[in-house]
Length: 60
Image 1: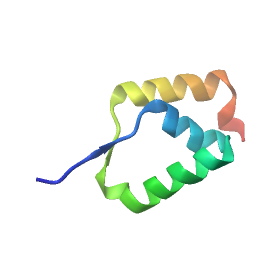
Image 2: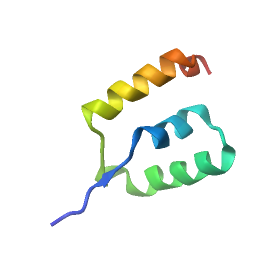
Image 3: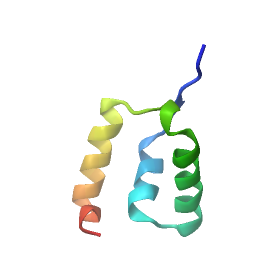
Image 4: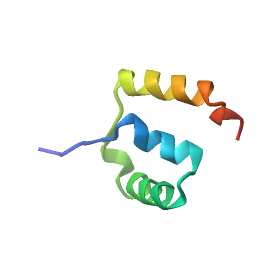
């Protein structure tokens, strides 16, 4: 059985916001090293969209 990796919304926010830098770097490495195993739920996508648009992080 292949294990899957589920990343919560806050980890995706660190990736997009690039702040704080130490968390951004850690999550970037996790995603780079494990991308085929990552799963994202529709709830996480909805929460991520809400936060990114509300905090205007999509413009960076």
